[in-house]
Image (tube, rainbow, N blue to C red):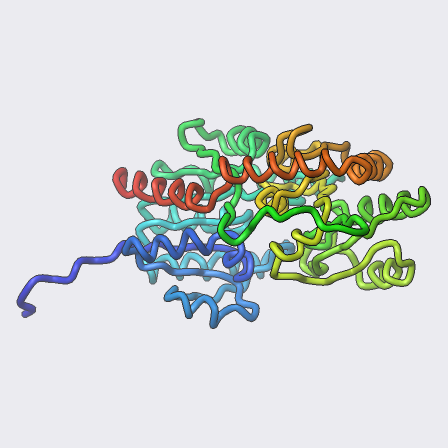
Length: 385
């Protein structure tokens, strides 16, 4: 027999995300505030080299083998079984599912195990909804059916980052709009990003992203070639690494060719984005990927930098066209080069767009606002459980 007052039971919040570095870059502040508010935070994720970082924050970590691109039936069944088993063991009060496979597998597992509340974060629809061809059409049909099953729980909120994704998910999953919340991206710590004056000397145009074809890397390189042919004085920095798990990854052979050509400078992966962007004149993202709200554009705004990006879902929603940056058509290096050249030749416009971008970041993208919105969702789900 136990005597005395029992210790209060902590609410368990479980994040399910495909890889640890994505969780740290896009959801860490939310998880830390949840810890601060008394949640026991579990992170179920694929582990690279970030385990010690996760543990240092006080999270309970569960390793998960999950491939972002594989469609092998046996491995997918094993992944789903591991998620189901983990939810049964942990018995979380709320699960927060991030990216496509965790949303699909985790949503179904949460329904089967009776998790009281579910948050499904649609941080972009990825290449599944962008790919062409017969196989892609079949996969997309199946994914839509799975969304209906995964997002069918009564006590559920779906977070979308742009209106196009919201419309697609509402139609695909048959969701009422009352279950969908719009939150603009993963936020940015404005105390870390400062709007410094534009650098002197040769203008620098930077693209920082995973090196995927769909992110517009080829268009970026082609625009660099065009401006070199026009004898425009400018440096192009390409920042990031290939993503071997994504079928659209840029190859090492392509990078070697560009390096020898010298039209762009390859800087590889950089973690200090505030310092990187402070050295830039313009930030470019010519993406036609299934974006949510690209973090690099939010960071560009926070750093007070003019942006050139595509008139594409997610990208166009991260800027105020004509005020904080310029929109160009997808897959069009010529108009991309023209827009970059226009800004280079009009430094006053770069400056005014940068100031407007910083104001936009302060108004819409402050991390405190993003974190508060998520914690409010958790609270509402608890009240309805």
